[in-house]
Image (cartoon, rainbow, N blue to C red; front, side):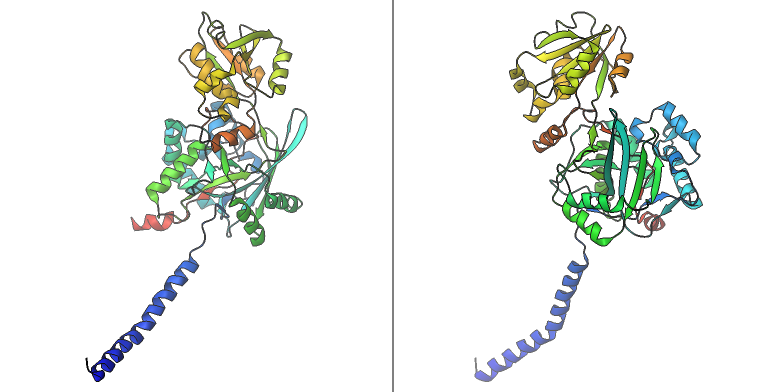
Length: 446
């Protein structure tokens, strides 16, 4: 090619490059700005909660209630008598009328009974209670918790269909997380400790007593440095769901169905706490119909069975720290069971940690041999368990599950039988609500 033609070709290509350069640079800058504007998706984040209006309701104690799954019909009636605005009136759908719950919820918002915060906060909760004549204090933070971050939030129990269907219908109608799930970090969180010390000396945002008379206080954590410290430290924690497995699964399914419709839909309202002195787990005893003939002979193949006094039974359940231990109350007598040979655990347990869990062995090795078809009743009191027995029913008395066993089982990918953990006291419902933002905008588009 002649030299002039080469120079002309080079100049044309240079002109094309110069002309396209601003567009290329603009596209690159636009892409960078879009990336910069997109916030990091933290494991936990603050939020603007919906809560009772303290200017209109002087006594918050009359409107909060326990979680939906521990309210029986008698307690529900008592709670409703306390106030026409008691939270159980929307938390529990009367006769499965979910639209009525929505209408009531919307009415409370219109009347200003419930109001929205104008800024995003974490909400620090303090619960004081007495157990075994010892006063304890438990702290936790109400936050949004990410649902879809792998390897961070671990369930430990199996769930059932009916409760999930109920909570899904509530979520579909009200477009809100009405009560938090309960999650625990496996070690102390220093930023959490610092916030507890700092805010517990201040005037609380809310103050009330729960139905058992335990005093509760709540503070808003609005300081950005405190928020960053909490979210930063929680980022690497492996959290275990202590309570709220049905709600967690429902929220996860709802997120997959409605992805993109609401802001932060991949987050759920959660109560986050860590391992500290105020974290108390109670045993959950079982009462069930049992076979009438050869009850103990069916168990003697695997267990040494010894009749004991009530006081000795209580002492053994409270002090035995190794191996499998189980108490049985039947025919107005107490019996204590020990495994004859722990090698049998290798045949029934999927993980090593499950061998240290009384409820797992109970459900795999004891109940299949002596329980008749029917509903299992649960209680945390030995006295109440004994009162529930009849000539056809026996009580199965277990130890409280050590929190380390729960973490070990989830680390190994295992699950616990239902009602293996019970953290006391319960986190009250109605303290704060998380509404799904964007619902009003989307409804106008329909």
